[in-house]
Length: 288
Image (cartoon, rainbow, N blue to C red):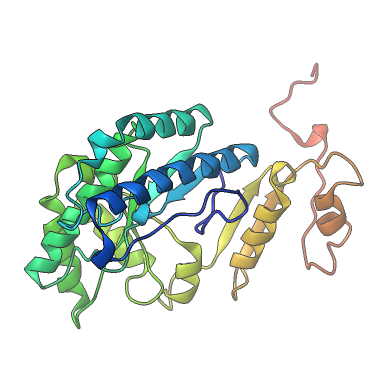
């Protein structure tokens, strides 16, 4: 199991990204900001590696105006050594990279110009991950877009636009349920129709789901080996009516945080505690 976070890396010195407004986006200024942002990625990746974080979302703004004519730089060529070195570092530490285009990348818009700009933006994201040398596990996470008063038609437009995307984009694109319009069931149906993988966002599902959506059921296998923060976050995400959590674990001793926080407090946690021994394992022979 890998963990990650969807926020900026503020704890690592030198990891802050830079930006530039369009009126100041001269070639020299763009090159300066790109160089600074790539330099900032190095300590950010180092922070992930040091803290055992193996999922890392890279900001779409790492290359300012990456899909716009405003940026006419051949940034893939100009920064090739730096990009390749960052990719090698991510792979060396087993860090899986992803990108999440912003709210203006709308593939299902009824406006053809908006769709074309979305395709260009997705191509930029794919090109950046390609420039890092990442394999197809480096994903571009995208929401469906707008409903425009007709969700079935909006989903159909997404599917039609997806079919026209180049393979370099399709091999990386995954679809995520959102917090207002398209539920997990909507996106799962779209995934089956297009073949694009789905990403399930638990927080969005809590905010936006059908009334008959399945209850929350989460299994945390070997919970005592997981970071405490991850277990607590999983519990917090399941704070909805009807949710159920199952843990299996073997805490190291009475001083372990899971033993103190759950097993000794099973009654106040309203937890069913089941204790198993070697004799309870039917797959073991008497000799073992």
